[in-house]
Length: 400
Ligand code: ADP
Image (cartoon, rainbow, N blue to C red; front, side, top):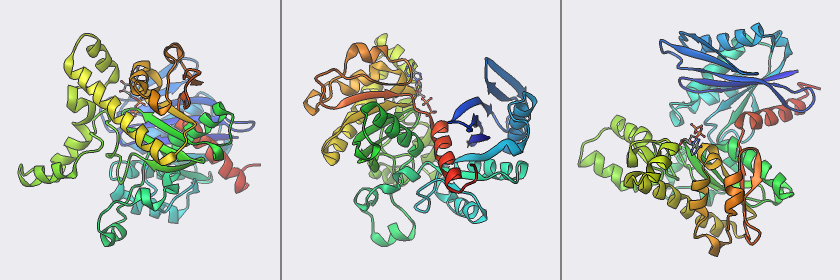
């Protein structure tokens, strides 16, 4: 039996096909990029890389091409080999707290959440609808980026805004990157040799989008992203926390409209706004050559992370480990070094040699005198989706 895991974004989609007969084993993965553009690309990653360049009109065409490639190469003989299809859905609102088998009602609810995630949920829905059409008998499962954070207590998820407005408009903190934080929790608990339910962690997902989660006894009790993924850490092109008064000032004094503010906050701020690039590799290279703007962007990025670690230590009480992940968290020893520097008073001491030596997998990189352990984990959202889907399919006896 096989499982098809899909992450359908606005102009691209990523997929992984797993064999789930005996454990969960990746067969092939790849992506379709530049959907809707003239020169799209479908990629298959397996024993080298194969690329098919073609025009991809929409998600339906992209998925047809992907599945055609999988069948053409013999990875998938027929749709009846599929025990299920797993779909990443960015926003599950307060309604979805766990992976969910998709039926008409679930589809409607995901649709009703589009106003909360106008860029993401429509693309996620496209993927689901296409697979229902292409493989009608296969169970379809939705895995929500918000679900892991539904354990947050009200004291963490409520904004201090008027009660009636918060309740009427569902304005509250939801948090995102839940699949990654969930995966990091499980891998960190394994490294610690503890039950997940006994692990207190601070997990850092530092990619183009970035968020940090406080995990108490295995449950998310706070996270830095809020009503939207704009809140919290400094990101590639988003500023993270800003004074809401700045937006009022721009609206009133500078007459900027919502579309301009959207572009400013989602695409022109963060690292890019500070030093004209959102690529941390370029920032590190420029900093090494004495570029002051790149050095400042790097400092602001790391400073914000330190502030959140301090805040989450305060609410968690005892912390077993701080976990670094995401493109930056996983690959940049320099960012990890800067974040952990001057944190020995809070019990964090990095081992510089271990830190520099990390390449892949999941490893501890703290020194023996560190009270709080420090881990680097290669996150794997597709594998997390596969794990949760297999559990769900077994529960509903959709597979034996
Ligand atoms: P996304 O959130 O889009 O999935 P990723 O998790 O792939 O993004 O992270 C992208 C970020 O990781 C970029 O800022 C990129 O520069 C950074 N990154 C990737 N490799 C390295 C590296 N070797 N050193 C430092 N930063 C890196």
